[in-house]
Length: 512
Image (cartoon, helix red, strand yellow):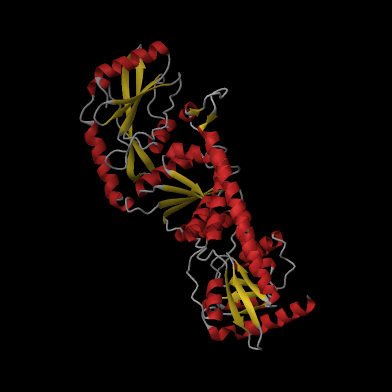
């Protein structure tokens, strides 16, 4: 674990300074870092520049002095778990000399409800066996539990986390939706964690004990991504990242990433880029070394701008350019709508929760082949098609981006020009996935967003989709609503919808 002379030197220096001293030691025996703490504790710095060892552990062990006559404590275990250290050792002292060495290590699987084990304390001069053999055997066990090659497939493997101060049932519903979002983004979900707290932890959002549990779970499963259901502040993302050494994103960033991968039109790509930049801007932070990277020039007073200030200015400049381009694209869309209006062609817009079946319905109605998958946000760019009703009435039917609870404000703002299509509609068809157990809550989310967009006054017909997948109880609940039931994949079931929609549309046009 540590050489006899090194132990004596640490004890002497620690006693002289009246401070704990720690060493981070490579498996080769070379000292990577020396950490000087205070009398009660040491703080291990970020280790991002130190690569992990040959397996899941970091390849570093920590040995530090202690003035207490006790072994490894909870904080030591927390550091060992979060930093994936090979071993954690605490050396007690007596009159400036080494006394006992207490050593702990993580367990590849829980034993008697514990995630770590402690070896019998020994005097540094009486250490038996090789700590390297112990580390390598532990690592082989971790690898046997979850082979390394599974992690290196290029696919994100995530642990989903939700911290709530409210109802656990609501948190579980939201978590189920997060699972679907992750699936849409191509993320493999390895586990879910829900913690209910009286209040959010200002730094970690969840408790330190739960954070340690998450880190140990991530270590065992080969997780490389923590995905939070709540929106995190920049400081929370940084704190959790520093303590777990894992990538951390929240629900908003996940939705933005899904949109970025699905946008196909130029307008859609511009809108997503703007939303991402606006989301990123307040999260730009600087680390200590960034303050030394200053730029200036001849005649510049002071050190000039920091790297952070330059990054922010460039992002703001890019946002301004995107706004101009979107304005130009929006103007083209406005002219297209004007030409359509001059031909007096009524417009029907499909709205609804994401993955409710809007694109499938549009395909069946118009015999089109728009992308329609069982994924959240499979369709982003608005699509318009012509449709002829049974009573010789031609309309344009438009499919728009689906809604979702807690839709990021940046997205709603960015998609304003796209959502303007809804303002031109003479009738809204609110498509509802009746097979989803949460369909009533989804209806409430869509109606609230329509009100927020000031579209609540437009005529709206509720269209209950997926009748072929529901039980009798759901049909009874639907009967209490004013709407029409269909199966979007079955053209024969759409006749009542066409009749009802044409009736409402003609009444709307006469009123207008």
